[in-house]
Image 1: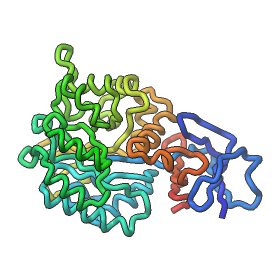
Image 2 (image 1 turned 135 degrees about the horizontal axis):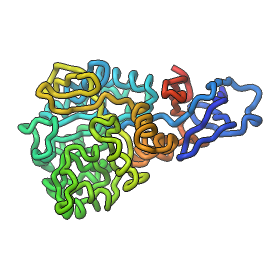
Image 3 (image 1 turned 90 degrees about the vertical axis):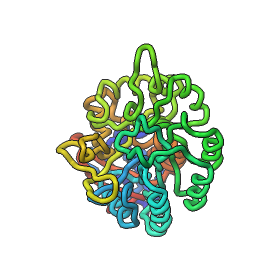
Image 4 (image 1 turned 120 degrees about the horizontal axis):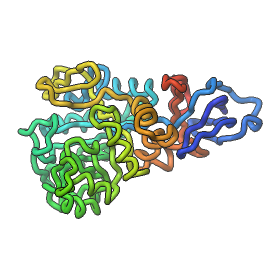
Length: 369
């Protein structure tokens, strides 16, 4: 049956449109039309003047609701995450796995493959953040499990995963070129993170490395005589994620990153959940998560809150902040022909929120849930 969302401000492609309706049929956006062109025999949802945006896409989240998939991978943790994210307006996500033992990585791969059969549709695969990192920039990752990658190990994981590994964060300056070439051949996005690369090293490897993970965090700070990784990112402009909570990164530095990177800067939550299981016992301390020793770990963000923070605190127009949460991550994982926009022929992955950034109608594949 044809459905229509009306009385809304459409946020898509960096613009705001009023006076139009979004028509949906068979989980696909059939058209975006003037209100006067809405057919008479459709099921109409009046959004009461709310914003209607493409569903958010979070390419790095570890867990939700007390289940930390990134530390104790399971089908149940993926289901918890998927349900929670749909309720928050996020209609696509990569479940992240931090540096851990090979057994945990393989457990995550097995859980992803098993969950694929029952997923509602917004689980997009895995993001392995580690273990091929630089221990000098380990952050909350355990140094004893960080190591240089081997072609034998990564081939084993990729073959087991059967396409579930979508992004891998590594420290490229420590890896052999054959490993980087192999990941590229497999179509896996390579993201530079937890790296201590010099400006010169990074300027060399960004020809084969497509992205950078959580800008500024677990990287050398900018220095006027030793520019390091961040200025190389600004120069080379790979797709670059940022944690826009005002804690992991200050708002003036988010503004700077936006000026430098433009449509290559995108939002992630890097969110975790309170847990005492495994090697990542995250503790919630009011507005952030830390390890028991006080080391800052993952965020307490939602994607909608990240959009709000960019709009209210970093000088980024709302429609552009929505692009950072939807269109740009879709481009990175090459799903931008189907998601990230409100346009004819795209999947009806949508979210609606009011001017106070409260969720209104939560939609996925054209249906309220």
